[in-house]
Length: 447
Ligand code: ADP
Ligand code: MG
Image 1 (cartoon, rainbow, N blue to C red):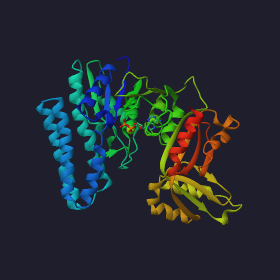
Image 2: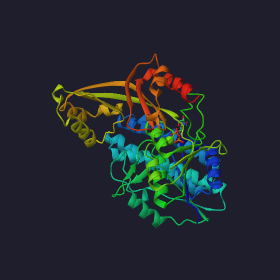
Image 3: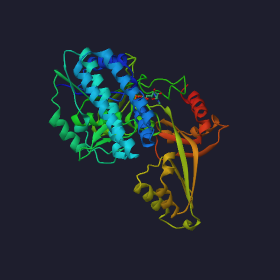
Image 4: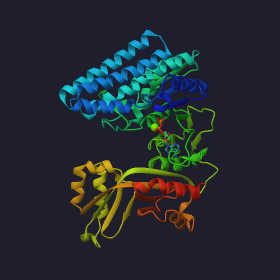
């Protein structure tokens, strides 16, 4: 084998039988050795809804959702093949899902562990269908469906499991036998812990799975196929003038992902960077468009490359006058966040207070808030959007801040973060101003 390639197709690329066939043709054209797929479009949301309804004891609604899931997938299958074996597999999976949902309904509760089991059906079902699409489009190869859970070993943090790279490497080398005669199909997003229980890598985690498989098998290239032709200068859904980026460094792309560009899961690039695997992001709907290459170093290094937006932000301010001229205040605060594994995005400090931005779900963690309140008065506010300008050498450009503020004159900036990295400049604004700030800044810096 000269080159090993890992490809991943997201939910939008698994929308219906046509999207599946189109994606399978891309796998063939690029000779993907491993192809990982997400659940079909919208199915993960349906599964989350199903869990909620079963816990609430709404069996009629559960039946409706189960019916929708069943119909949707059998419909795709019928358009792909009349193969009975695939139909059997699909039937068995959906029946298992129903049994599990009935169990949750009877118990009136669903553990995080059970939730992972339920949502894993999305990927397991779509991979059965996609295998059929691959068989049709790529008859020259033997198409082998495998269960990612046997390879992607993780810890037991259900809902957001941490991968165990050593085990992934061992399981990969035991299982895969790459050659130009075989193409493997597996599921993104799911894994299993040491007891064999199903785990998931967190929302959008299929990108991360693909990167872990790429690292695990020592791939030369990782391809992420989605519904847009690569990474754009900002979310094309928000800003019609968003432009494609053909090349971007790992550092810039990581900042984009971290600061909310939904195109990539924030942790995707960690394995790729660690192992120096170049990542391609392209559209499964327009495979011949140029797409984006993410790699170690790139030639063009513009001051502002892109603008990302992360909504659903909360601002936590911890203050205590006792800390005037004392030390240890920050240490205690960050120890507390670490203990609860909460990631903090932006930080500003004064002598007696520290303000941090966190995802608003963090405010549901009452234990964390209680522990923080032992350190000082805690004030929490919600309704913010973090806007990040991402680029290069941003700390060496006189007048940059002035230019930024001139373009958002009538928008109230609640917090400002700059200085920790040459790759970004972050401002926190009210949700209602987020899109306007992006549009104005994009027009000024990118055009
Ligand atoms: P998939 O199901 O393939 O994983 P996602 O919906 O997770 O797809 O990600 C693709 C979406 O990311 C695009 O449709 C686009 O709206 C959004 N997006 C956000 N920021 C950007 C950006 N800077 N460039 C391109 N797409 C972006
Ligand atoms: Mg995604």
